[in-house]
Amino acid sequence: METQDLKNKLDKTNPEQREGKVATAIENQTAKIPSDVYLWAAVGSMAASFILKVMKKDDEALFVGQWPAPFLLLGVYNKLVKQQGND
Image (cartoon, rainbow, N blue to C red; front, side):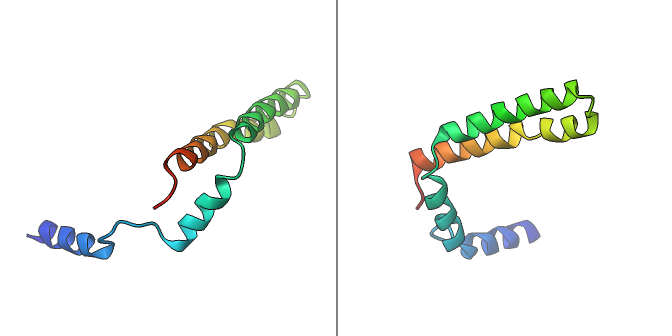
């Protein structure tokens, strides 16, 4: 019974299933950035991490070495926004 009530409330929250103003503005701005930027940022952070590791700065190398995945994820988001657009 409670599950059905929750589902009914959620269905009434955003019946048209449209994006908000902030999400639309972000999507419009990110669509202007070329997809290569994210790829090169990921490659650059991998190179920087390698250089830091060679310089025996292990903590910094680990920190910078975690950047490629978010850059690539942002690139995928960018590509989706360009292909699908917003509402």
